[in-house]
Length: 186
Image (cartoon, rainbow, N blue to C red; front, side, top):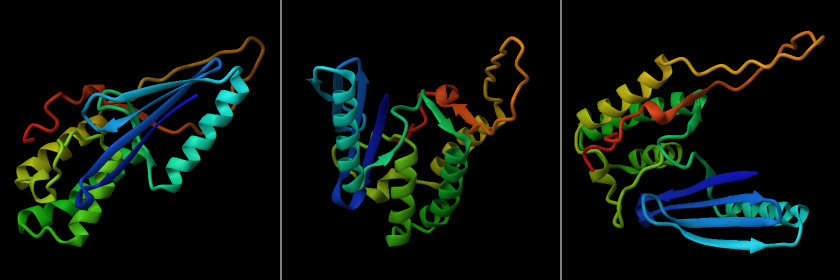
């Protein structure tokens, strides 16, 4: 059982993550600024049930503070719907960057985008410098679109004397195919 949460607010210079994993009777929590060395704390709780309970309580607390589920790094997996949403947000962001109009609407779209795509923005977030040109926006849009063109690996499970059941699995793509210079301009 594990989770990765982010809290992004460029206006308040906030770009934080919080992650937790339960292993046996231990709950390991990591937190810090995206792109920087994490702080770590291990809670030894005696049994697995207590670790899960503590995990659930801490996750609920973070979610109430405005944290949102995300993926931990650009080389993890992401639901196709999240990639689609990130592309839509880049389409919203693009005209603002083109016109150098860094209004509240731009900030809101940027906030939503940064919650989907983990982004090392440094210690001082300047929303008007996240994208310097439409070329930067287009570059990221191309990379995200390339993920949708790459078929996700399929895993088949066969049971003896068992007919396959219809399932509706969430489509997932690997972010591993995105090059390390995704944020080339930062």
